[in-house]
Length: 247
Ligand code: NAP
Figure 1 (cartoon, rainbow, N blue to C red):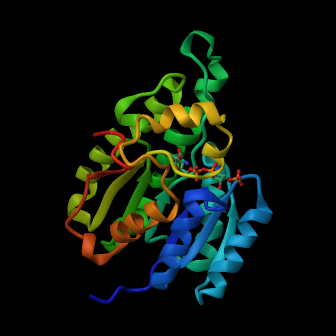
Figure 2 (figure 1 turned 135 degrees about the vertical axis):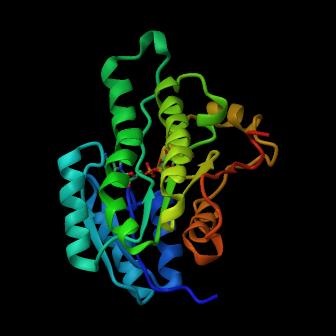
């Protein structure tokens, strides 16, 4: 089955899992909009790597937690590379604290970025997908949204809510050629995990049957599959990639 060349927007693609997904989709030949919020140099580096793979790519600044910023970012991406066929809602943050100590701002910031960001970006991209009767929405969540985690009530709630969002939107768009799926990674070696103390990493390792953290390219292959023609009958699915952590 040959893959048609599409335009993919990946939020939070300036590093980590988002950057790995951008590279994987570029290998298929898709043009890529690399969204970032605050690190333009990182995004430019990713864009350079994508162009070296022979595809069109552009960095687009935008804060996914801000509705107006999302509108402007998607307009900029669309003006440059055409309407968005594949949306990967990857941008996400943590702000860990025990609930007893959590500030309202910590809770809101995480929900606004992870959940509302997914909502704003999806809503903005859906009309053109529905019009052309083809689209892919891929949400990057977390196994913590399935099994919970101490200190992450905000983060786990935001990710679990995206699972429910995925199921509902998949039903809404099922007859329109648009699939909506999610990937729930376990612990993956990116900046998010690098900052954890060695003691905490050792403790987390006891939860993982495979006894190692994953790598971004162990997530990106599934995103490429979900974006492909081969996955056309798959919607409303949450795929865990976590070394067995949530078994
Ligand atoms: P990361 O290395 O910290 O990178 C986060 C990316 O998100 C950066 O490109 C950052 O851009 C962008 N970003 C942050 N806030 C944003 C905002 N408001 N608007 C737009 N972009 C924003 O993250 P990661 O570890 O690769 O994680 C990627 C996704 O996977 C997240 O949704 C995360 O929750 C999920 N996940 C990660 C793990 C893990 O172990 N790493 C596990 C489970 C799930 P700037 O730097 O330019 O601001």
